Length: 323
Image (cartoon, rainbow, N blue to C red; front, side, top):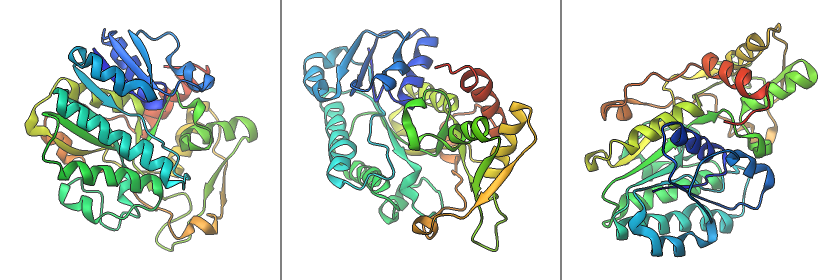
């Protein structure tokens, strides 16, 4: 039995699909299942049980002997959330409790951290444990994720196998419910469908052309491939925090070209000013250092932005399908 928290969310539901495709159907889905739109992510998927987030720990106390591994992907992921009480409850305290249960019951744990922990990137994007204490995230969400990473590294009592993954810019199917927090790819696709153009932030720095700001965009199917790999390589020597991006930053102009190309349209980009309230915090470049994950044996090639966008648009967005 495998537990997936955040199972009705974007990455969580895609992981459930990946597990089903690999013939893993004895799954326990944990989430707040009160959002009907979000629940569409798990329609048609195979699982043994749904457990409300608030009741999960009581369930685990009774059923821990049945659990082989926990994927803890549930979190408040809104980067504009400024209520630290909510973030502390859902991203910090809840995660601490998951960790402590995994230690107590001998359950392997794979959890979601975030590249938002890196802040403005002034310290680079190296997933060395030595940098975690020095990081200064730019928003409360990133702070909450980094606080848990810092806490985890200080613990003497750890699950016998544990991995934290700093997700970079993940995009792909099953993010229909995310609203403003959906990926740039999702929003840009709908801009094209509605207006025939994409709006990108212009550059306010002389060393970057408009639209040449870069991100490490990673397709959600590559994320689930890594999660599946780690599930099968539970070596305590691998315990730690890892980046999960492609290791190759690509520009917003390249993203736009991929979208227009997939739709068979000529590019039409409008550059707009970056809002002043975020201009001084806006990141011009993110790129995961991926040597650490590669060094523990993960060899699969990550999709390029064009490859990921083509699959996402042609197989899901145009057909309004879920994965």
